[in-house]
Length: 327
Image (cartoon, rainbow, N blue to C red; front, side, top):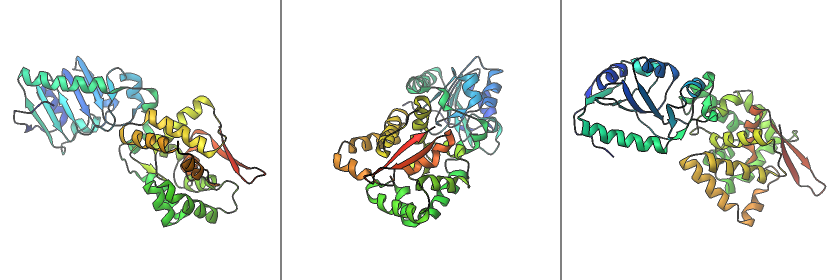
């Protein structure tokens, strides 16, 4: 890690800071990025490279700037490396961030040796970052949700779900304790939706009266719905649409979601998915997971309608319910 050996000073709005450090050649690590900011920089900059810490970018960034932008999930903070110095502070690389006079931004001119060290840090970050893929692009309508990890849509959905399940079951879902929570969640669903053929689907319909499922799927990975990170669901949904799959049981659907998460979800979420896959090798644990109303299928039922899919349950002669996902 490079050291800042020269004093930073307040430099005002980000656009002024970038001019001071020489934005004609800019390497940026930022929390968010949008098309308007990139287009403004392109008017004077010969080269711009951006590493963004968010899990998704506006679709226009993907379509117009995919070669100049990469994602390093979970990276926080803003650092700008110009031709003559460094800038840092509270302003992300967005149209609003460029001119926000209230953001505390700092800049310092640096000698070539220090700039070279900073550029080496950025080069290593760029090497490790993920190139933009289409599934990282979101429509403008969801952009505001991505900027607020605990936005109103997720909060309203969780509140509605808690209302349907009761405080004990809702707490289990929020804390993601499958072995402790299966029974209270199943009983709460049965009690609330006893006239429904598939209780999870009725719960999904109830929640979706409060908030669009598409907005829930557009939420960042840090937002949790029903105890599951949305990243798991998004990764699973992408494969579900691509493969047009149906599943013989809830546990098979859950395993598919976990495997997708282990491939797609970074850091903490990936670790959780891999740990759960390891636990599923235990036959006893697997059998305990095969509940009549599978706890783990609830978040799937809540989000699958967003991609035009649904869970359908059929009760066999031996009393076991087999659930399949249809799109």
